[in-house]
Length: 189
Image (tube, rainbow, N blue to C red; front, side, top):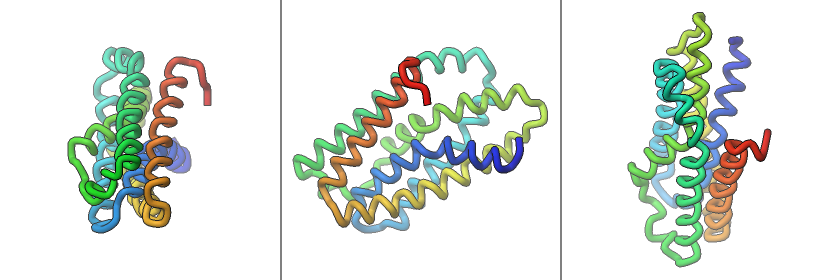
């Protein structure tokens, strides 16, 4: 795979994680650098790890995950997005704005990197793939994109407050719906 193709693949794999990072940034009011580093590291690490796991596992388990991944991702993103909207409307948004929940980051990291698992499986067909290099590039690009997404989200969150949080929750739900429709074969992008 050419380096440009790998970079484009990495960027496309990072887009769901970027959207979630943007939404997480909407709620941050302080400790922005630390939070951006943590969020970027979680998403980057999972995006790097999942292709390796897919590469190692082979066809058997991927077929099983492929049948249901869109339902799992839809459920997780819809729940988190709905909670974001609910918290913003109820005013609980401000109480937890600077708290990063590790369990939530792990769940979101897994949900946004399932497609990287499938990509890793396709890498196993090519004997010339340097999986360590591919995983490092995918993880590094995801880290950078998510790190920036947190800052961008914070700018909008500080400027627009609750409406930005409601919009962010809607974006997460719409991403979940899009992935569900793609998984069901209703939508093809």
